[in-house]
Length: 260
Image 1: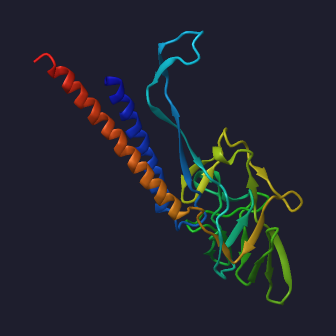
Image 2 (image 1 turned 60 degrees about the vertical axis):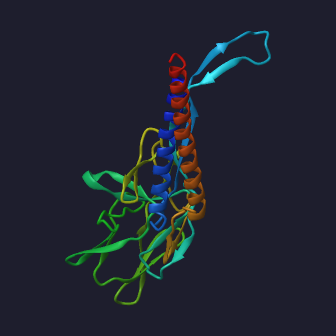
């Protein structure tokens, strides 16, 4: 019965983590370019109560469950039209490159960019004010007299000058990773490269797996109905594990009362 209590307790802890993960998904259902997460679990060691090589089936008891990973699903969300020329939705494996705190390069799928004005120069930034980088790793600037910013499917940024001519300035920086699951989520819709993710593979016009849609934002890929079903399933599993502890406790009490 003691084994049953520990086993059920590990199940309750696992389902609590599962509920925490699902709750975070639901909380970010309307977050731009949010990628849903899924908790994964593994069973624990087994105790061999009886083992005989000649028997087709032996007797072993498991010791519960443990969390193994929380995996992000990087499938694309639906594009939402905004008609804002600074809103960009990236379709494909790529991430926008951003200069984060302490001059550290970060990556994002959130293309809700803004213009930060400093005197006669204007810089393209994220909503938090982090500079967006071009394909050469430099910050993207515009002159105050340049207007009608246009960004092609390949990420080429064009502007219209005062004399009416169109000028290509640079290309929005994008990068992909061999293992995006290994990226570290740092908050603010930003990711940092890690040893597990591998080094960023910077894309250019001739080697790109991504296309950019101007005037669109990528929505979250969270499916609310599925998350609600998963939440109910996790709750029921939690309740069943708690019932297992109550049952084991009652059986122990019955065994203790036999001597009375």
